[in-house]
Image 1: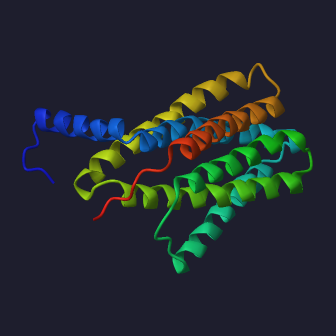
Image 2: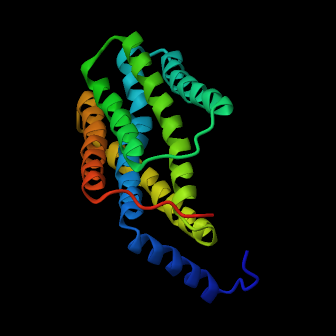
Length: 211
């Protein structure tokens, strides 16, 4: 915590966080990847009510979809409550993004509601997995005196993807088939995560920071 809470201190801390990200290109690429992948992932929440309506006008089907995703995330939480992760490689995060996006894109290829629930469960499972991997990686890669600044910037950029996704898919759903929009949401994540994965393989991962 900083005793000096004036505006100058706030913007100085913000610049310090951005300066670190600018030097650590691999972490900067992770932030950009999170933004674009999350546009697709958050767009899915806009599309789920329309997916449920395609199956039935009964509102309980939307509840089944959200419950299935929640159960996947819950299972991840239960796994990590007994199994800790001490080291995470950046490529594992990108591969998880890739699996998540593939699951989203796969929703456009099926009309069977049971299979839809299975895909949604897997998406929730991987989403929960990503939610553990990223903070673990950041904590190992960012100096402790910069951790709050860098985390704040990462979360702000990541959360910015939510209104962007809601606008893009909220407008698009009036003009395009719901199946195509699921494919677009997944394809955005697939292309972004694959690109970042290839960059990571080519340039290597950032060194861990000694706490």
